[in-house]
Amino acid sequence: METELFEQRTDLTALSDAIMRVRKQIQSIIVGQDDLVKLIITALLADGHVLLEGVPGVAKTLSAKLTAKSLDVRFSRIQFTPDLMPSDVLGTPVFNPREGSFDFKRGPLFSNIILIDEINRAPAKTQSALFEAMEERQITIDGKTYAMEPPFMVIATQNPIEQEGTYRLPEAQLDRFLFKVVVPYPTEEEEFRILRQFNDFGGADVLATVQAVLRQDEIARLRQLVRSFVIEERLLQFIASFVHQTRNHKSIYLGASPRASLAIMNASKAIAAINGRDFVIPDDILEVIPPVLRHRIILSPEKEMEGITEDVILKQILQTMDIPR
Image (cartoon, rainbow, N blue to C red; front, side, top):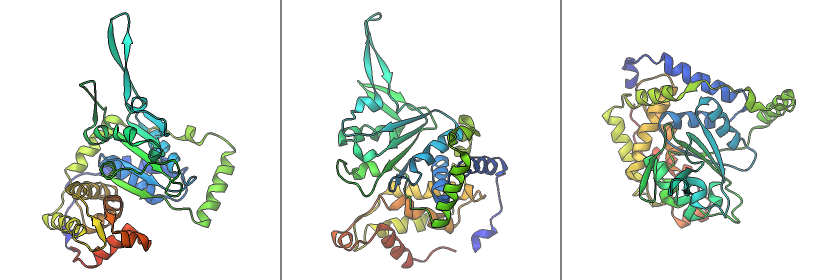
């Protein structure tokens, strides 16, 4: 592979050590789900949000909690329900009789790592309250803008099976998530290890065993470092060509936008960092294409009726392209 001729330009010892410490903390409790853990850390390095989709009980919520516990940051959890209002998430002005003015009481969204459980349970009005915060890292209330303190990362969960009493996320909101991670059932061997591990814990609080191993300033420094990583023009052209193919494919009703191209580029740099390199290779791009694009394309009605998934179509597109080597 030509890319292997690149020499390391950056000392990644500190970055690799930080990533290893966070992964070790999470994987000390989460059995299996290695891809899930890797993609959450990737999103953290790439300053992106993550949507976790899976049936109840496959460690979606626990993974988000463990990530937050492994970082020296503030964490909040919001359970979305059909009666949840935007003010319950963002906050609301409260009258101060002593001063004769309104003070803004911040909601649970003002945190660093925000877990939103069952994001598709809240109505569109409450879901739309997240748009500005997720994209611009700020919210505007009564004409006044409040910045979100970095790092600001939303980890949302949803159940793909139970649709009663849910509100499908609009495409504009799905586009705000860097990744959509499909969380599978564990294998039989992994399930056995889960049972053995939690039996060994003896009912103890597993979260209490997790220590914060990465500070806010360290996260900001790592993100800045990752953004400076090298990606060749031929790889940028490959990303552009692939995304363009999604807009002209007979099985795709709605293709990906330029935001998706940027997401692939940023995510591939973060994956390169996790893999111990300061430059991107084609394998990094191939690894992030499915989680970046599966929620950003809409299949044609015919393909949906056939039960074809987005991942299958993305794989078909890859098979028609010359992958840089």
